[in-house]
Image (cartoon, rainbow, N blue to C red):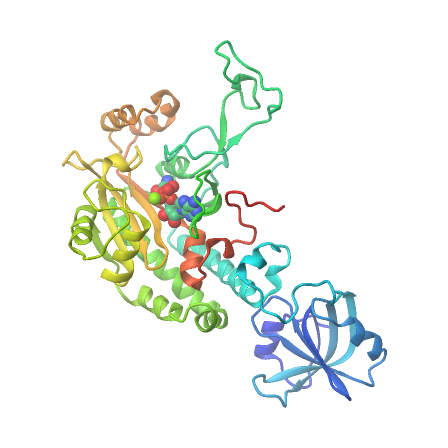
Length: 463
Ligand code: 4AD
Ligand code: MG
């Protein structure tokens, strides 16, 4: 018997077809002559209604076992559904219960739980409507990312997760070591002797694959990374994770304008693709989570992003009559409240802010002739704030060397990065898109911990 996925069956199944489905029971309703079980296999939002007649062999045992959460295989005949809201249902001929779920102890019963509670049962929450929709949308976003770059001839490169360098220079690194933490070897200066560690020097989990992506871009032209990144910043917010996924395109022979164009086309493509492929899930979010997500998606796809310089942004913020917690002045690192004011209230669409003060940005960004600002760009989105951070890179050896020195970074550690400027350097640019932030933006989910299956955040790691 052909095993069918429920989403596809609901779309294309015809009365008279004999089919088998496998999934988990969402609810059961028992009447005198027959019972209904709603079965979901994760393929879509809608459940398949299974009808079990009282005269089915072993129906008493089956119905006793068929509680919410039980895993089942149902074979039967597709019939037209007399009920409203569904075209077809499945009349069971055999039902096999693989694993029961005790209604006394299985927590995912009809009652709606809060997201906070569901976060404490990350091993079960994917079986709920909301998380089902979130992770299908997440998957569709990931597919759209690859499609976008592959169609444009970008090479997907795999940059290391364990690294010896701090790309962002922010010191938010998790250490990787195989030393015995209870018996650390010390050197003459009574500091930990990392020469005895696994790699013979200090190692960390990467905060970004950018520096390695630059290496690859200077060989392949256009590349992108898509992998996990780690930050030990103690930010207990609804927008920060300690482990998150980032997409980082990097393009040789490209300046900041080209970078902005790519970022805008990229976001538009992801939104369009998800609307096409996850229409039902997106409608669910619009109805149940945030009634502006469809309008927002439409806005992203059909309007040009605003582009302003940091200096202009500061002027706009100073002009506003809004009282900000962090007072606004030139040189300030934009805070979430400022970013959201610009995107949500002033322009009501994504805003690309460029040319930030060098002081508040990483060492690798290309310096402007004014001596004060760098060719940085942040894409700010309504509700989530910064969703993309990027820049044109400093491709001039002498300027980069000076900048590294001024930032207090040990140039010897970056000898290979400097080599890229010694041999065949070109203007190049790239950016990083926070994958969870885009899923959050898309779905309207308020907390970033609800758009990654197993969130890691300060004091938060269950298994
Ligand atoms: O702005 P960031 O720090 O930029 C970089 O890492 C560059 N090396 C990227 C590049 O040019 N190749 O991070 C990029 C994006 C942010 O805009 C944000 O969306 C996301 O990564 N991000 C986080 N997402 C979740 N949790 C965190 N703690 C995040 N930190 C950054
Ligand atoms: Mg940033």
